[in-house]
Length: 342
Image (cartoon, rainbow, N blue to C red):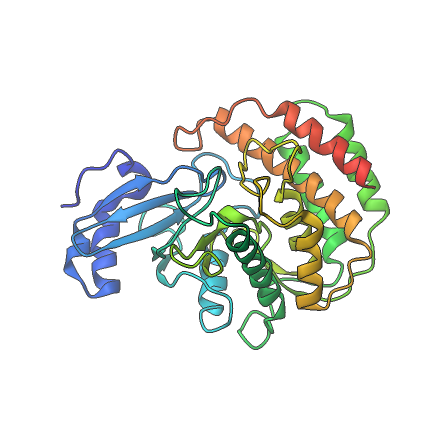
C-alpha cells in the first residue's frame, strides 16, 4: 500500500505506484508519496518519492478545463522526441491517457540543478561573468530548439505552421473570452489590433510556448549550462519569434515593473539587458528581428490571458489550494503595455 499523501486524491498513489514499479523495474516504487511542487500555475506538478529515488508527475488542474489546454500527451511526446537532440529535456518514464489516476498524466525523471524564480540560490552566479554565461546559455538553448528539424525527430505533424500567428491571436482571444470575469477594453483593443497587423512568418520550427528562466533547470555547479527545459504544455510547430518575444517579456530590467506571477532575477546587476538577449539570439539563430515589436505586443496579450486563466482557476479551487491574489491590475498593465508596443 502506498504511503499516505495529502494529495492522494489528485495522484492516486495506490494505482500509480505499481505502474511505476513495472515501468522502472524497481519494486520500491510500489510504495510512494506525492508532494505538490509550488510554482505551477497551470498544470499541477508533483514530486514523487520512494525508497528508490525521486520522480516528477505532471497532470492537469482539477475542475473544468479550457479546450486544447493542459494536454499531457503532447508534453510527453515532445520531450521524448527531443531526447536525442541538442535540447536538454527530462526523460519520460511513464505516460498515461487517464486510466491510472482518472486523468491524463506523465512521469519524468527529476533533473538535478537549480530552478531560479525570485531569488538566486546563495552563492550561485554571483559575478557578472557568471550571470552573463547563465543568460546566454538560456538564449542559446532557445536557438538550439528552433534549429531542430521537426520532421527528423517525428514532430512534423505536431502543429500547423501555416497561418500560425493569426491562429494564435484567434486562439488566445477565445481563451480570454472563455475566462474573463469582466470587461477590459485594453485587452479587447489589443486583440483587435494584433489580428489586423499580423506580420509575415519567416520560418516554422518547434516552439516551446512558455519559454522563461524558471522553466529550465540550471546546472548547480556551472551556471552557463542548462540541464533541462521544462513545461512543454504550450509547445507546437509554429513561429519561433513567439518564443523569443516571451523571453523578452519575462526578461525584466532594472526599474521595470515586475510580473507578480513570474518573479525573476534579471533586474539584478550583471545580467544582460533585454536588447543584449535579443541580439544574442539573433546572432546565434540568424533570425531577422525587424518585426519583434509586434511579437512582443502579442506576448503581453498572451500572458494577460494566461494570468486571467490562473486567477479564474485559483478562485474556483482548481489549483491545489494555491492562491495568486488579485491579478486585475497586472492584466490591465499588460494590455496597456502591449498597445504601446504596437
